[in-house]
Amino acid sequence: MALEGKINEDIKVAMKAKDAAKLRGLRAVKNAILMAKTDGSGDAMDEDREIQILQKLVKQRKESLSIYEKQDREDLAVKEREEIETIQAYLPKPLSDEELKAKLTAIVNDMNAEGMKDMGKVMGRAQKDLAGKADPGKMAQFVKDLLL
Image (cartoon, rainbow, N blue to C red; front, side):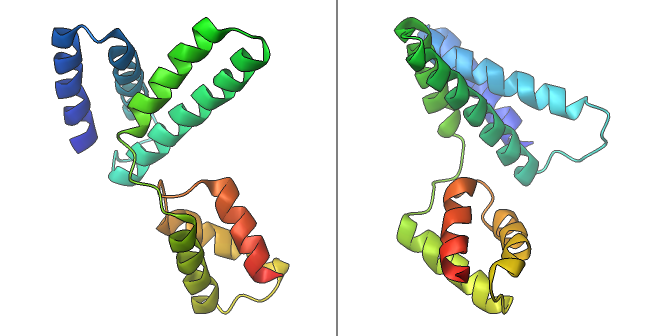
């Protein structure tokens, strides 16, 4: 619940500062959290779930940004970039490539993984252990390199 309280406080600050760009991003996060809390799944709103929600919002905006850039809609692309920046501020600091490789190597060694047949198990644990700290696509590539 810490994220929800922080978002509510930051919305107040953004409203007072008349920061429309930040306000859009914060309201999107607040809406996504509210929707997740009332989706009927019964899942608790813990830190991992909050991170998943934020990652999903960033991913959606990056996909929209890509479309807007292909269609030369800079007016819409600017809004997406602003919202991405606002939402990413609430995600944990991403790991550097070296830190990510070290953590993935430790996971592979710990699980005694050998070959591509173990990639699913390694990725499952890596995504659980490193939630919000690394791009899943980059993780998959590093794991693939380690297991080959």
